[in-house]
Length: 558
Ligand SMILES: Nc1ncnc2c1ncn2[C@@H]1O[C@H](COP(=O)(O)OP(=O)(O)OP(=O)(O)O)[C@@H](O)[C@H]1O
Image 1 (cartoon, helix red, strand yellow):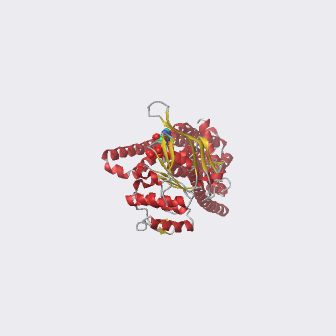
Image 2 (tube, helix red, strand yellow; image 1 turned 90 degrees about the vertical axis):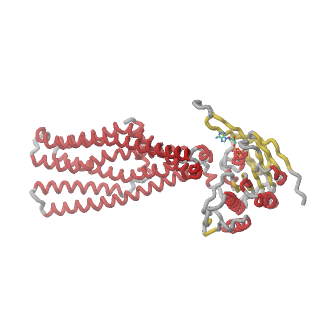
Image 3 (cartoon, helix red, strand yellow; image 1 turned 120 degrees about the horizontal axis):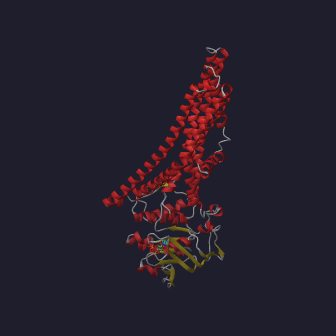
Protein backbone atom coordinates (compact mmCIF):
# COMPACT_ATOMS: atom_id res chain seq x y z
CA UNK A 1 0.00 0.00 0.00
CA UNK A 2 1.30 3.44 -0.81
CA UNK A 3 2.29 5.79 1.95
CA UNK A 4 -0.55 8.14 1.04
CA UNK A 5 -3.18 5.38 1.36
CA UNK A 6 -1.66 4.53 4.75
CA UNK A 7 -1.91 8.20 5.60
CA UNK A 8 -5.57 8.19 4.59
CA UNK A 9 -6.38 5.26 6.87
CA UNK A 10 -4.55 6.89 9.73
CA UNK A 11 -6.39 10.18 9.03
CA UNK A 12 -9.62 8.32 9.63
CA UNK A 13 -8.37 6.52 12.74
CA UNK A 14 -6.96 9.80 14.04
CA UNK A 15 -10.36 11.43 13.59
CA UNK A 16 -12.14 8.57 15.40
CA UNK A 17 -9.67 8.77 18.28
CA UNK A 18 -9.67 12.57 18.51
CA UNK A 19 -13.20 13.61 17.79
CA UNK A 20 -15.04 10.32 18.20
CA UNK A 21 -13.26 10.14 21.61
CA UNK A 22 -12.77 6.42 21.08
CA UNK A 23 -9.92 6.00 23.51
CA UNK A 24 -11.76 7.94 26.22
CA UNK A 25 -14.78 5.69 25.96
CA UNK A 26 -15.31 2.71 28.33
CA UNK A 27 -15.44 0.57 25.20
CA UNK A 28 -11.68 0.16 25.43
CA UNK A 29 -12.02 -1.33 28.93
CA UNK A 30 -14.89 -3.57 27.79
CA UNK A 31 -12.88 -4.75 24.81
CA UNK A 32 -9.97 -5.51 27.14
CA UNK A 33 -12.18 -7.42 29.58
CA UNK A 34 -13.96 -9.30 26.79
CA UNK A 35 -10.66 -10.42 25.28
CA UNK A 36 -9.08 -11.29 28.63
CA UNK A 37 -12.09 -13.36 29.67
CA UNK A 38 -12.09 -15.15 26.34
CA UNK A 39 -8.46 -16.05 26.79
CA UNK A 40 -9.28 -17.23 30.30
CA UNK A 41 -11.99 -19.36 28.76
CA UNK A 42 -9.51 -20.98 26.37
CA UNK A 43 -7.13 -21.59 29.23
CA UNK A 44 -9.87 -23.14 31.40
CA UNK A 45 -11.09 -25.36 28.55
CA UNK A 46 -7.57 -26.52 27.83
CA UNK A 47 -6.79 -27.20 31.48
CA UNK A 48 -10.06 -29.08 31.89
CA UNK A 49 -9.29 -31.16 28.82
CA UNK A 50 -5.78 -31.90 30.09
CA UNK A 51 -7.20 -32.95 33.47
CA UNK A 52 -9.68 -35.26 31.76
CA UNK A 53 -12.60 -33.13 32.99
CA UNK A 54 -12.94 -29.90 34.94
CA UNK A 55 -12.47 -29.86 38.68
CA UNK A 56 -14.57 -27.46 40.77
CA UNK A 57 -12.19 -24.44 40.69
CA UNK A 58 -11.75 -24.88 36.95
CA UNK A 59 -15.52 -25.06 36.50
CA UNK A 60 -15.94 -21.80 38.47
CA UNK A 61 -13.16 -20.19 36.40
CA UNK A 62 -14.81 -21.35 33.20
CA UNK A 63 -18.22 -20.06 34.27
CA UNK A 64 -16.71 -16.75 35.37
CA UNK A 65 -14.89 -16.39 32.05
CA UNK A 66 -18.01 -17.21 30.02
CA UNK A 67 -20.24 -14.78 31.94
CA UNK A 68 -17.64 -11.99 31.91
CA UNK A 69 -17.04 -12.49 28.21
CA UNK A 70 -20.76 -12.35 27.38
CA UNK A 71 -21.54 -9.37 29.61
CA UNK A 72 -18.57 -7.27 28.48
CA UNK A 73 -19.26 -8.13 24.84
CA UNK A 74 -22.81 -6.84 25.34
CA UNK A 75 -21.63 -3.64 27.06
CA UNK A 76 -19.08 -3.11 24.32
CA UNK A 77 -21.80 -3.44 21.69
CA UNK A 78 -24.17 -1.00 23.39
CA UNK A 79 -21.37 1.52 23.97
CA UNK A 80 -20.30 1.01 20.36
CA UNK A 81 -23.76 1.96 19.14
CA UNK A 82 -23.65 5.12 21.25
CA UNK A 83 -20.23 5.98 19.80
CA UNK A 84 -21.51 5.42 16.26
CA UNK A 85 -24.50 7.65 16.82
CA UNK A 86 -22.34 10.34 18.43
CA UNK A 87 -20.00 10.41 15.44
CA UNK A 88 -22.96 10.44 13.08
CA UNK A 89 -24.42 13.34 15.02
CA UNK A 90 -21.10 15.20 14.95
CA UNK A 91 -20.60 14.72 11.21
CA UNK A 92 -24.16 15.60 10.24
CA UNK A 93 -23.87 18.79 12.25
CA UNK A 94 -20.52 19.53 10.67
CA UNK A 95 -21.77 19.14 7.10
CA UNK A 96 -25.04 20.99 7.69
CA UNK A 97 -23.18 23.83 9.47
CA UNK A 98 -20.79 24.04 6.54
CA UNK A 99 -23.77 24.27 4.15
CA UNK A 100 -25.35 26.96 6.33
CA UNK A 101 -22.16 29.01 6.41
CA UNK A 102 -20.96 28.46 2.85
CA UNK A 103 -20.50 31.35 0.50
CA UNK A 104 -23.49 31.81 -1.83
CA UNK A 105 -21.26 31.22 -4.85
CA UNK A 106 -21.15 27.53 -3.83
CA UNK A 107 -24.89 27.15 -4.40
CA UNK A 108 -24.71 28.89 -7.75
CA UNK A 109 -21.95 26.71 -9.12
CA UNK A 110 -22.51 23.18 -7.80
CA UNK A 111 -25.07 20.44 -8.09
CA UNK A 112 -26.27 19.24 -4.67
CA UNK A 113 -25.73 15.47 -5.16
CA UNK A 114 -22.30 15.30 -3.59
CA UNK A 115 -23.54 17.23 -0.54
CA UNK A 116 -26.45 14.77 -0.06
CA UNK A 117 -23.98 11.93 -0.45
CA UNK A 118 -21.71 13.44 2.21
CA UNK A 119 -24.67 13.98 4.54
CA UNK A 120 -26.03 10.48 4.17
CA UNK A 121 -23.70 7.77 2.83
CA UNK A 122 -20.36 9.20 3.91
CA UNK A 123 -21.34 10.12 7.46
CA UNK A 124 -22.92 6.70 8.00
CA UNK A 125 -19.94 4.90 6.58
CA UNK A 126 -17.50 6.83 8.77
CA UNK A 127 -19.54 6.58 11.96
CA UNK A 128 -20.12 2.83 11.58
CA UNK A 129 -16.37 2.42 11.76
CA UNK A 130 -16.57 3.13 15.49
CA UNK A 131 -18.03 -0.32 16.19
CA UNK A 132 -15.64 -1.80 13.65
CA UNK A 133 -12.81 -0.18 15.57
CA UNK A 134 -14.11 -1.66 18.82
CA UNK A 135 -14.39 -5.13 17.23
CA UNK A 136 -10.93 -4.72 15.80
CA UNK A 137 -9.50 -3.67 19.16
CA UNK A 138 -11.15 -6.65 20.80
CA UNK A 139 -9.80 -8.96 18.13
CA UNK A 140 -6.28 -7.53 18.38
CA UNK A 141 -6.27 -7.77 22.18
CA UNK A 142 -7.54 -11.32 22.00
CA UNK A 143 -4.79 -12.14 19.54
CA UNK A 144 -2.18 -10.66 21.84
CA UNK A 145 -3.49 -12.65 24.81
CA UNK A 146 -3.83 -15.82 22.76
CA UNK A 147 -0.35 -15.44 21.32
CA UNK A 148 0.97 -14.92 24.85
CA UNK A 149 -0.74 -18.06 26.02
CA UNK A 150 0.30 -19.97 22.92
CA UNK A 151 3.91 -18.89 23.51
CA UNK A 152 3.80 -20.80 26.78
CA UNK A 153 2.85 -23.92 24.83
CA UNK A 154 4.79 -23.58 21.59
CA UNK A 155 6.89 -20.74 20.11
CA UNK A 156 6.87 -22.07 16.54
CA UNK A 157 3.06 -22.03 16.62
CA UNK A 158 3.14 -18.32 17.55
CA UNK A 159 5.55 -17.55 14.73
CA UNK A 160 3.42 -19.53 12.28
CA UNK A 161 0.26 -17.66 13.43
CA UNK A 162 1.94 -14.26 13.10
CA UNK A 163 3.14 -15.15 9.60
CA UNK A 164 -0.38 -16.26 8.70
CA UNK A 165 -1.88 -13.03 10.05
CA UNK A 166 0.74 -10.96 8.24
CA UNK A 167 -0.07 -12.73 4.98
CA UNK A 168 -3.74 -11.82 5.46
CA UNK A 169 -2.86 -8.18 6.11
CA UNK A 170 -0.48 -8.16 3.13
CA UNK A 171 -3.27 -9.49 0.89
CA UNK A 172 -5.46 -6.61 2.07
CA UNK A 173 -2.70 -4.07 1.46
CA UNK A 174 -2.28 -5.29 -2.10
CA UNK A 175 -6.03 -5.09 -2.70
CA UNK A 176 -6.49 -1.70 -1.07
CA UNK A 177 -5.32 0.62 -3.83
CA UNK A 178 -7.39 -0.73 -6.76
CA UNK A 179 -10.42 -1.28 -4.53
CA UNK A 180 -10.14 2.22 -3.14
CA UNK A 181 -10.13 3.75 -6.60
CA UNK A 182 -13.25 1.75 -7.52
CA UNK A 183 -14.98 2.77 -4.30
CA UNK A 184 -14.28 6.43 -5.05
CA UNK A 185 -15.78 6.07 -8.49
CA UNK A 186 -18.80 4.25 -7.01
CA UNK A 187 -19.30 7.21 -4.65
CA UNK A 188 -19.11 9.64 -7.55
CA UNK A 189 -21.82 7.65 -9.34
CA UNK A 190 -23.90 7.71 -6.16
CA UNK A 191 -23.64 11.51 -6.04
CA UNK A 192 -24.75 11.63 -9.68
CA UNK A 193 -27.69 9.44 -8.74
CA UNK A 194 -28.74 12.01 -6.12
CA UNK A 195 -28.50 14.74 -8.79
CA UNK A 196 -30.67 12.65 -11.10
CA UNK A 197 -33.14 12.17 -8.24
CA UNK A 198 -33.20 15.93 -7.82
CA UNK A 199 -34.13 16.23 -11.50
CA UNK A 200 -36.82 13.55 -11.07
CA UNK A 201 -38.37 15.34 -8.12
CA UNK A 202 -38.12 18.91 -9.35
CA UNK A 203 -38.76 18.32 -13.02
CA UNK A 204 -41.73 15.99 -12.58
CA UNK A 205 -44.02 18.10 -14.78
CA UNK A 206 -41.57 18.56 -17.64
CA UNK A 207 -40.76 14.86 -17.55
CA UNK A 208 -44.40 13.92 -17.94
CA UNK A 209 -44.96 16.21 -20.89
CA UNK A 210 -42.19 14.84 -23.03
CA UNK A 211 -41.63 11.15 -23.30
CA UNK A 212 -38.14 11.46 -24.82
CA UNK A 213 -36.99 13.55 -21.87
CA UNK A 214 -38.47 11.05 -19.45
CA UNK A 215 -36.78 8.15 -21.24
CA UNK A 216 -33.46 9.99 -21.36
CA UNK A 217 -33.52 10.73 -17.65
CA UNK A 218 -34.63 7.18 -16.87
CA UNK A 219 -31.67 5.97 -18.93
CA UNK A 220 -29.39 8.28 -16.99
CA UNK A 221 -30.73 6.95 -13.69
CA UNK A 222 -30.23 3.38 -14.92
CA UNK A 223 -26.72 4.23 -15.97
CA UNK A 224 -25.62 5.77 -12.65
CA UNK A 225 -27.37 3.08 -10.62
CA UNK A 226 -25.68 0.36 -12.72
CA UNK A 227 -22.35 2.11 -12.40
CA UNK A 228 -22.68 2.39 -8.61
CA UNK A 229 -23.57 -1.27 -8.34
CA UNK A 230 -20.86 -2.50 -10.72
CA UNK A 231 -18.10 -0.41 -9.20
CA UNK A 232 -19.06 -1.41 -5.68
CA UNK A 233 -19.19 -5.08 -6.64
CA UNK A 234 -15.83 -4.81 -8.40
CA UNK A 235 -14.26 -3.22 -5.31
CA UNK A 236 -15.80 -5.80 -3.00
CA UNK A 237 -14.63 -8.59 -5.30
CA UNK A 238 -11.05 -7.38 -4.90
CA UNK A 239 -11.46 -7.28 -1.13
CA UNK A 240 -12.99 -10.73 -1.27
CA UNK A 241 -9.90 -12.06 -3.10
CA UNK A 242 -7.77 -10.67 -0.33
CA UNK A 243 -10.10 -12.27 2.23
CA UNK A 244 -9.76 -15.63 0.48
CA UNK A 245 -5.99 -15.30 0.50
CA UNK A 246 -6.15 -14.59 4.24
CA UNK A 247 -8.41 -17.59 4.88
CA UNK A 248 -6.09 -19.78 2.81
CA UNK A 249 -3.16 -18.72 4.93
CA UNK A 250 -5.15 -19.63 8.05
CA UNK A 251 -5.96 -23.03 6.61
CA UNK A 252 -2.27 -23.55 5.87
CA UNK A 253 -1.56 -22.57 9.48
CA UNK A 254 -3.96 -25.20 10.80
CA UNK A 255 -2.58 -27.93 8.58
CA UNK A 256 0.99 -26.99 9.50
CA UNK A 257 0.22 -27.17 13.19
CA UNK A 258 -1.22 -30.64 12.83
CA UNK A 259 1.46 -31.91 10.47
CA UNK A 260 4.63 -29.90 10.99
CA UNK A 261 4.49 -28.93 14.66
CA UNK A 262 5.14 -32.45 15.93
CA UNK A 263 7.99 -32.76 13.39
CA UNK A 264 9.84 -29.49 14.02
CA UNK A 265 9.32 -29.48 17.77
CA UNK A 266 9.09 -32.19 20.34
CA UNK A 267 5.43 -31.35 20.90
CA UNK A 268 3.43 -34.33 21.98
CA UNK A 269 -0.17 -34.88 20.95
CA UNK A 270 -1.51 -33.12 24.06
CA UNK A 271 0.53 -29.96 23.31
CA UNK A 272 -0.45 -30.15 19.66
CA UNK A 273 -4.09 -30.43 20.66
CA UNK A 274 -3.78 -27.51 23.06
CA UNK A 275 -2.06 -25.34 20.49
CA UNK A 276 -4.73 -26.36 18.00
CA UNK A 277 -7.44 -25.27 20.45
CA UNK A 278 -5.79 -21.87 20.85
CA UNK A 279 -5.39 -21.53 17.10
CA UNK A 280 -9.03 -22.42 16.57
CA UNK A 281 -9.99 -19.78 19.10
CA UNK A 282 -7.75 -17.24 17.38
CA UNK A 283 -9.29 -18.10 14.01
CA UNK A 284 -12.22 -15.80 14.79
CA UNK A 285 -10.18 -12.74 15.79
CA UNK A 286 -7.71 -13.19 12.93
CA UNK A 287 -10.64 -13.33 10.51
CA UNK A 288 -12.18 -10.34 12.27
CA UNK A 289 -8.98 -8.34 11.79
CA UNK A 290 -8.56 -9.33 8.17
CA UNK A 291 -12.21 -8.99 7.19
CA UNK A 292 -12.50 -5.73 9.16
CA UNK A 293 -9.77 -4.02 7.16
CA UNK A 294 -11.88 -3.48 3.99
CA UNK A 295 -14.45 -1.73 6.19
CA UNK A 296 -11.75 0.74 7.21
CA UNK A 297 -10.76 1.22 3.58
CA UNK A 298 -14.40 1.97 2.63
CA UNK A 299 -14.77 4.37 5.53
CA UNK A 300 -11.51 6.13 4.79
CA UNK A 301 -12.65 6.71 1.18
CA UNK A 302 -15.90 8.16 2.54
CA UNK A 303 -13.97 10.27 5.05
CA UNK A 304 -11.64 11.58 2.36
CA UNK A 305 -14.52 12.48 0.02
CA UNK A 306 -16.56 14.02 2.82
CA UNK A 307 -13.59 16.23 3.66
CA UNK A 308 -13.37 17.28 0.00
CA UNK A 309 -17.00 18.39 0.15
CA UNK A 310 -16.34 20.20 3.43
CA UNK A 311 -13.31 21.92 1.91
CA UNK A 312 -15.44 23.12 -1.01
CA UNK A 313 -18.12 24.36 1.35
CA UNK A 314 -15.52 26.01 3.56
CA UNK A 315 -13.89 27.93 0.71
CA UNK A 316 -14.63 31.58 1.58
CA UNK A 317 -17.00 30.72 4.41
CA UNK A 318 -18.93 33.44 6.13
CA UNK A 319 -16.85 34.88 8.93
CA UNK A 320 -17.52 34.35 12.64
CA UNK A 321 -18.68 37.94 12.90
CA UNK A 322 -21.25 37.35 10.15
CA UNK A 323 -22.50 34.19 11.84
CA UNK A 324 -22.82 36.05 15.11
CA UNK A 325 -24.67 39.01 13.53
CA UNK A 326 -27.84 39.96 15.33
CA UNK A 327 -31.15 40.17 13.55
CA UNK A 328 -31.48 43.83 14.40
CA UNK A 329 -33.16 46.28 12.10
CA UNK A 330 -30.53 48.99 11.67
CA UNK A 331 -31.55 52.30 10.20
CA UNK A 332 -29.55 54.20 7.65
CA UNK A 333 -29.36 57.59 6.02
CA UNK A 334 -27.23 56.86 3.04
CA UNK A 335 -26.17 53.76 1.17
CA UNK A 336 -23.40 54.34 -1.31
CA UNK A 337 -21.95 52.00 -3.91
CA UNK A 338 -18.53 53.15 -5.08
CA UNK A 339 -16.90 51.60 -8.14
CA UNK A 340 -18.54 48.20 -7.50
CA UNK A 341 -17.39 45.47 -9.90
CA UNK A 342 -17.94 41.73 -10.08
CA UNK A 343 -16.92 39.15 -12.65
CA UNK A 344 -18.88 35.94 -13.16
CA UNK A 345 -17.08 33.06 -14.83
CA UNK A 346 -18.18 29.76 -16.29
CA UNK A 347 -16.50 27.21 -18.57
CA UNK A 348 -16.45 28.34 -22.17
CA UNK A 349 -19.05 27.11 -24.65
CA UNK A 350 -16.19 26.03 -26.90
CA UNK A 351 -15.64 22.33 -26.22
CA UNK A 352 -12.17 21.02 -25.56
CA UNK A 353 -10.76 24.31 -24.33
CA UNK A 354 -10.11 25.45 -20.80
CA UNK A 355 -11.28 28.94 -21.67
CA UNK A 356 -13.98 30.68 -19.65
CA UNK A 357 -16.93 32.88 -20.48
CA UNK A 358 -17.19 35.84 -18.24
CA UNK A 359 -19.66 38.59 -17.45
CA UNK A 360 -18.54 41.79 -15.77
CA UNK A 361 -20.78 43.95 -13.68
CA UNK A 362 -19.87 47.59 -13.17
CA UNK A 363 -18.11 49.67 -12.17
CA UNK A 364 -21.27 50.89 -10.50
CA UNK A 365 -21.58 54.13 -8.56
CA UNK A 366 -24.87 54.78 -6.85
CA UNK A 367 -26.27 56.57 -3.82
CA UNK A 368 -29.52 55.29 -2.27
CA UNK A 369 -31.56 56.88 0.48
CA UNK A 370 -34.51 55.87 2.65
CA UNK A 371 -38.02 56.77 1.55
CA UNK A 372 -37.38 56.22 -2.17
CA UNK A 373 -38.98 53.82 -4.59
CA UNK A 374 -36.40 52.76 -7.13
CA UNK A 375 -37.27 50.65 -10.18
CA UNK A 376 -34.49 48.77 -11.93
CA UNK A 377 -35.06 47.69 -15.48
CA UNK A 378 -33.04 46.28 -18.35
CA UNK A 379 -33.09 43.34 -20.73
CA UNK A 380 -32.49 39.74 -19.77
CA UNK A 381 -28.94 38.97 -18.75
CA UNK A 382 -27.99 42.62 -18.23
CA UNK A 383 -26.87 42.07 -14.64
CA UNK A 384 -29.88 43.11 -12.54
CA UNK A 385 -29.94 39.99 -10.35
CA UNK A 386 -26.17 40.03 -9.92
CA UNK A 387 -26.41 43.66 -8.88
CA UNK A 388 -29.18 42.81 -6.38
CA UNK A 389 -27.06 40.03 -4.89
CA UNK A 390 -24.22 42.44 -4.31
CA UNK A 391 -26.49 45.17 -3.02
CA UNK A 392 -28.08 42.83 -0.46
CA UNK A 393 -24.66 41.63 0.73
CA UNK A 394 -25.18 38.06 -0.50
CA UNK A 395 -22.29 38.27 -2.90
CA UNK A 396 -19.01 40.05 -2.28
CA UNK A 397 -17.97 42.49 -4.98
CA UNK A 398 -14.59 41.89 -6.62
CA UNK A 399 -13.83 45.60 -6.58
CA UNK A 400 -15.16 48.81 -5.10
CA UNK A 401 -16.93 49.41 -1.82
CA UNK A 402 -20.35 49.62 -0.29
CA UNK A 403 -20.51 52.44 2.25
CA UNK A 404 -23.27 52.49 4.84
CA UNK A 405 -23.52 55.97 6.27
CA UNK A 406 -19.93 56.51 5.17
CA UNK A 407 -18.58 53.28 6.72
CA UNK A 408 -17.35 50.52 4.40
CA UNK A 409 -19.19 47.23 4.59
CA UNK A 410 -16.59 44.48 5.09
CA UNK A 411 -16.71 40.69 5.15
CA UNK A 412 -17.13 40.97 8.91
CA UNK A 413 -19.83 43.64 8.97
CA UNK A 414 -21.84 42.27 6.05
CA UNK A 415 -23.95 40.19 8.48
CA UNK A 416 -25.28 43.30 10.20
CA UNK A 417 -25.57 45.03 6.85
CA UNK A 418 -27.84 42.26 5.57
CA UNK A 419 -30.13 43.11 8.46
CA UNK A 420 -31.17 46.17 6.46
CA UNK A 421 -32.85 44.04 3.83
CA UNK A 422 -35.83 41.90 3.25
CA UNK A 423 -36.39 40.48 -0.19
CA UNK A 424 -38.58 38.49 -2.51
CA UNK A 425 -36.16 37.21 -5.14
CA UNK A 426 -37.38 36.12 -8.53
CA UNK A 427 -36.50 32.55 -7.50
CA UNK A 428 -37.68 32.79 -3.92
CA UNK A 429 -38.07 29.96 -1.44
CA UNK A 430 -40.95 29.66 1.00
CA UNK A 431 -40.35 27.86 4.27
CA UNK A 432 -43.42 26.10 5.57
CA UNK A 433 -42.18 26.73 9.13
CA UNK A 434 -42.12 30.31 10.36
CA UNK A 435 -38.42 30.16 11.13
CA UNK A 436 -37.13 33.13 13.09
CA UNK A 437 -40.31 35.22 13.05
CA UNK A 438 -41.07 37.05 16.30
CA UNK A 439 -44.55 37.28 17.79
CA UNK A 440 -44.96 40.84 16.47
CA UNK A 441 -43.86 39.77 13.02
CA UNK A 442 -46.36 36.90 13.06
CA UNK A 443 -49.14 39.31 13.96
CA UNK A 444 -48.15 41.59 11.09
CA UNK A 445 -47.80 38.58 8.81
CA UNK A 446 -51.41 37.64 9.46
CA UNK A 447 -52.47 41.22 8.62
CA UNK A 448 -50.57 41.14 5.33
CA UNK A 449 -51.99 37.71 4.48
CA UNK A 450 -55.45 39.25 4.87
CA UNK A 451 -54.55 42.40 2.98
CA UNK A 452 -52.99 40.52 0.06
CA UNK A 453 -56.08 38.34 -0.31
CA UNK A 454 -54.52 35.06 0.81
CA UNK A 455 -56.60 34.19 3.86
CA UNK A 456 -58.80 31.80 1.86
CA UNK A 457 -55.82 29.62 0.92
CA UNK A 458 -53.45 29.80 3.85
CA UNK A 459 -53.38 30.49 7.55
CA UNK A 460 -50.83 30.39 10.32
CA UNK A 461 -51.17 27.27 12.43
CA UNK A 462 -48.80 27.22 15.36
CA UNK A 463 -45.30 27.63 13.98
CA UNK A 464 -46.11 26.91 10.37
CA UNK A 465 -48.34 27.78 7.46
CA UNK A 466 -51.37 25.53 7.18
CA UNK A 467 -50.42 24.66 3.62
CA UNK A 468 -48.30 25.86 0.74
CA UNK A 469 -50.64 24.50 -1.90
CA UNK A 470 -51.08 27.86 -3.59
CA UNK A 471 -50.85 29.23 -7.10
CA UNK A 472 -47.54 30.77 -8.22
CA UNK A 473 -48.90 34.30 -7.89
CA UNK A 474 -50.29 33.52 -4.43
CA UNK A 475 -47.00 31.98 -3.32
CA UNK A 476 -45.20 35.14 -4.35
CA UNK A 477 -47.73 37.25 -2.44
CA UNK A 478 -47.19 35.03 0.61
CA UNK A 479 -43.44 35.63 0.29
CA UNK A 480 -44.22 39.35 0.07
CA UNK A 481 -46.36 39.11 3.23
CA UNK A 482 -43.36 37.73 5.11
CA UNK A 483 -41.09 40.43 3.69
CA UNK A 484 -43.54 43.14 4.72
CA UNK A 485 -43.96 41.63 8.19
CA UNK A 486 -40.21 41.82 8.72
CA UNK A 487 -40.35 45.62 8.28
CA UNK A 488 -36.74 46.03 7.28
CA UNK A 489 -35.55 49.45 6.07
CA UNK A 490 -34.86 48.18 2.53
CA UNK A 491 -37.32 46.00 0.59
CA UNK A 492 -36.01 44.30 -2.51
CA UNK A 493 -38.54 42.83 -4.93
CA UNK A 494 -37.28 41.05 -8.01
CA UNK A 495 -39.90 40.95 -10.77
CA UNK A 496 -42.63 40.80 -8.17
CA UNK A 497 -45.47 41.86 -10.45
CA UNK A 498 -44.56 39.40 -13.23
CA UNK A 499 -47.00 36.71 -12.13
CA UNK A 500 -49.70 38.89 -10.55
CA UNK A 501 -53.12 39.55 -12.09
CA UNK A 502 -53.98 43.14 -13.18
CA UNK A 503 -55.78 43.94 -9.93
CA UNK A 504 -52.83 42.82 -7.78
CA UNK A 505 -50.40 44.53 -10.11
CA UNK A 506 -52.27 47.82 -9.79
CA UNK A 507 -52.35 47.38 -5.99
CA UNK A 508 -48.61 46.72 -6.02
CA UNK A 509 -47.64 49.76 -8.13
CA UNK A 510 -50.31 52.24 -7.02
CA UNK A 511 -50.76 51.42 -3.34
CA UNK A 512 -48.09 49.22 -1.83
CA UNK A 513 -44.87 50.66 -3.25
CA UNK A 514 -45.83 54.33 -2.64
CA UNK A 515 -47.05 53.45 0.86
CA UNK A 516 -43.80 51.70 1.77
CA UNK A 517 -41.69 54.57 0.44
CA UNK A 518 -43.85 57.04 2.32
CA UNK A 519 -43.28 55.09 5.52
CA UNK A 520 -39.56 55.62 5.00
CA UNK A 521 -38.57 52.29 3.41
CA UNK A 522 -36.24 52.19 0.49
CA UNK A 523 -38.05 50.02 -2.08
CA UNK A 524 -35.96 48.55 -4.86
CA UNK A 525 -37.99 46.69 -7.45
CA UNK A 526 -36.77 45.00 -10.59
CA UNK A 527 -39.47 45.32 -13.21
CA UNK A 528 -40.08 45.06 -16.94
CA UNK A 529 -43.48 46.85 -16.75
CA UNK A 530 -42.71 49.86 -18.93
CA UNK A 531 -46.15 51.38 -18.45
CA UNK A 532 -45.42 51.66 -14.72
CA UNK A 533 -42.00 53.30 -14.99
CA UNK A 534 -43.51 56.64 -13.95
CA UNK A 535 -44.82 55.13 -10.69
CA UNK A 536 -41.49 55.23 -8.90
CA UNK A 537 -39.30 58.00 -7.57
CA UNK A 538 -36.28 56.86 -9.51
CA UNK A 539 -35.73 54.70 -12.56
CA UNK A 540 -32.47 52.90 -13.24
CA UNK A 541 -31.76 51.06 -16.47
CA UNK A 542 -28.99 48.48 -16.79
CA UNK A 543 -27.24 47.34 -19.93
CA UNK A 544 -24.32 44.93 -20.15
CA UNK A 545 -23.67 45.13 -16.44
CA UNK A 546 -23.66 48.93 -16.25
CA UNK A 547 -26.12 51.61 -15.25
CA UNK A 548 -26.97 53.50 -18.43
CA UNK A 549 -29.86 55.56 -17.08
CA UNK A 550 -30.51 56.91 -13.58
CA UNK A 551 -33.51 59.23 -13.70
CA UNK A 552 -35.54 60.91 -10.96
CA UNK A 553 -39.26 61.10 -11.71
CA UNK A 554 -41.21 64.19 -10.90
CA UNK A 555 -43.09 63.66 -7.61
CA UNK A 556 -46.68 62.54 -8.15
CA UNK A 557 -49.20 65.33 -7.54
CA UNK A 558 -50.51 65.20 -3.98
N1 LIG B 1 -21.16 31.87 -13.66
C1 LIG B 1 -21.34 32.72 -14.68
N2 LIG B 1 -20.32 32.97 -15.51
C2 LIG B 1 -20.42 33.84 -16.52
N3 LIG B 1 -21.54 34.52 -16.79
C3 LIG B 1 -22.60 34.28 -16.00
C4 LIG B 1 -22.57 33.39 -14.90
N4 LIG B 1 -23.77 33.38 -14.31
C5 LIG B 1 -24.54 34.24 -15.01
N5 LIG B 1 -23.85 34.77 -16.01
C6 LIG B 1 -24.27 35.77 -16.98
O1 LIG B 1 -24.31 37.00 -16.27
C7 LIG B 1 -25.27 37.85 -16.89
C8 LIG B 1 -26.06 38.58 -15.84
O2 LIG B 1 -26.98 37.68 -15.22
P1 LIG B 1 -28.13 38.25 -14.30
O3 LIG B 1 -28.83 37.07 -13.75
O4 LIG B 1 -27.55 39.21 -13.35
O5 LIG B 1 -29.05 39.00 -15.36
P2 LIG B 1 -30.48 39.65 -15.18
O6 LIG B 1 -30.36 41.04 -15.69
O7 LIG B 1 -30.95 39.49 -13.79
O8 LIG B 1 -31.34 38.77 -16.16
P3 LIG B 1 -32.91 38.40 -16.13
O9 LIG B 1 -33.69 39.62 -16.50
O10 LIG B 1 -33.01 37.39 -17.20
O11 LIG B 1 -33.21 37.88 -14.78
C9 LIG B 1 -26.08 36.98 -17.83
O12 LIG B 1 -25.73 37.30 -19.15
C10 LIG B 1 -25.67 35.57 -17.48
O13 LIG B 1 -25.66 34.75 -18.64
